[in-house]
Each structure stands twice: as C-alpha cells, then as structure tokens.
Image (tube, rainbow, N blue to C red):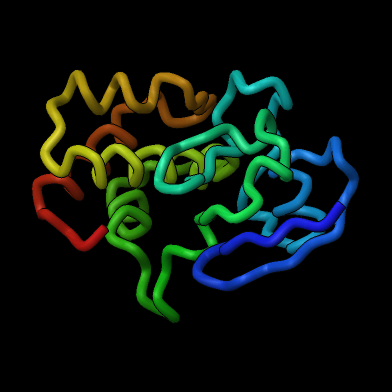
Length: 155
C-alpha cells in the first residue's frame, strides 16, 4: 500500500506493507532513527512522536493510520544548528545519560507544553509517566521540562 504524509514538515510518499507500524516507517523507510524501539508494546515511551500534535507510541500506530497526517520526530525539532529549547534544557540539566529514552521524553514534553504552556509539577509528572528512563531518576528530566515552561520558550 502507499501512504502520503507530512514528516517534520516534508511531504513523504511511502510504499509499505499493510501491517507496518509508524515506528517501522520512520526508522526503516525514512531512516529517522532518533525514534527508538524499546518494548514494542507501548509501555516504555521510547518511540513517542507527535501525530497531528498528539503524543503517540509509534510502535502501536499502524503506518496507514498516519496517511494524510502530520508527524514530528526528534529530528524535526532543531533549526539547523540551533537546538529546540527542550533539547537545550535537557542538555543544560543533564537530563540524559544513555540517551535512549530522550527523544521520546522530549516529544511527550513538547506535546504537553504545546497544549499547556504552564503546567504544574503534577501535570508534568502525569505527562511523562508513560516514558521509562532507567538512568536519570526523572528529577533532571522534570527540571528541564519545568524550566522550558517557565522560560516560555518557542515550542
């Protein structure tokens, strides 16, 4: 089957199997490997991307369901050499170690801040609860998201 979608602002037409996931489309067909495959069952959040502005687990979404829609991945956030404010905040707060969960964590944080530019601490915790990080202990991740919200950065 063939699908047409907008990925990181660029129109893409892709031929794929009917059972292909959005994660497979991004990683294998479009070579956007920032989106990670963790558990494959929607439990870890490593594959989180934005689909029409909503954070979704790309491993659970059929690629065909993205037909005619807009997808944003971690690769689409930086503007040339200028990092997105969330990316910069994660670096500044040492909110990453191995980096495996970072793309998904940033994408879920971006969805939160676009929907709610001034979230409470509890709202941040609620937003990231579906993303597992085995390295940082979440405190620095929380601080990076909170600082980005407080600065009112471009999102």
